[in-house]
Length: 432
Ligand code: EPU
Image (cartoon, rainbow, N blue to C red; front, side, top):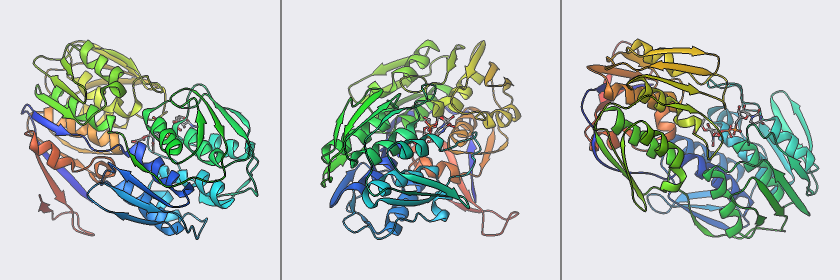
């Protein structure tokens, strides 16, 4: 257990180099299981969720090794198990991606069903229905999904158009890549993270038409070959730092980004009256005035990403006027709201809508992170607030943000990690 102590009220100023994307790299690592040979994935972030996925690949018999600070070599020539350990799936839902890859590669997958999640109910029925439509026999017993298919065969799969599920698109696409015949996935996700996986698969020899659209046509191939591929920059990390600049009245440039992945988010910052400058691979936000109120509803890409909704709530909490934020993707993603109210925010949540009446100042307080993105929102609130904030359960941030304190400290954030000794609660050991 650890917490982050922040002394807020200082404008952040400077440049942040954005890391590779967590949600793009996790599918790439699962997709590498389909490859009969070596894959080299560049721009891999050193974060806890990636380390969990590497342990997952290891446990299935793949050989993984960082050959430099951010390039991972994965050799999946000798897959020796089709059983995903519960301990790893429990830690991270993204590990369910190995189901589609194992089913395609080995004709069998035994993957524990990921449980509930603090941001809402997160079933995997779309994934499982897709596997069944591809001809797999699937049963669920004692909390485990057992799927089997001597030969997967192409199918026409129409997914729920409300969600365009990220995870189900990836999992079904992984399975369909080595299926016999053609698979069509309608209402596929178009998130940049999914498109990144489509591009990797094509580079490795898959035949996918409709890359970067909502309709994927996948002509199954016999095998995939090794390749070298670069994961995309993390648009969620970039959005987090830009909003941190905005809420602290600072001036932050994010570099190594793909601005075209961030247009909806930048549009919100611009509508909030902030100065936004965009270069080929950088974005700058200057918070030279209090933001103005805005309205957003989260939606599948290219809509406003649910993963930046908690950070947008902090921006709205400090804006002039009343903002409305509607969460349409997850049914319980306002866990940060009560904590923000303890810091002086004025927010009312009715069902899936938050009505946020902006205040001039937040005040530092002890608060608790409940997931990665709620944690990052509380860090932003702490950086903007007067006085000290302590964000407990800071491990959530380590799951998704590389070198989070160092990056904030480099642009003037006053942040200290406090590690709680094993079994202890009263005594704290400070680490930098
Ligand atoms: N859904 C179903 N059944 C399914 C799959 C999804 O009902 O079989 C519903 C979910 O309950 C949810 C909606 O569909 O209401 C969208 O879920 P989706 O499948 O798109 O999300 P996911 O694949 O589980 C990924 C990211 C999340 C991100 C969402 C939405 C990864 C590893 N996770 O989750 O990221 O919020 O897409 O963009 O890529 C995070 O990084 O902190 C995070 C939670």
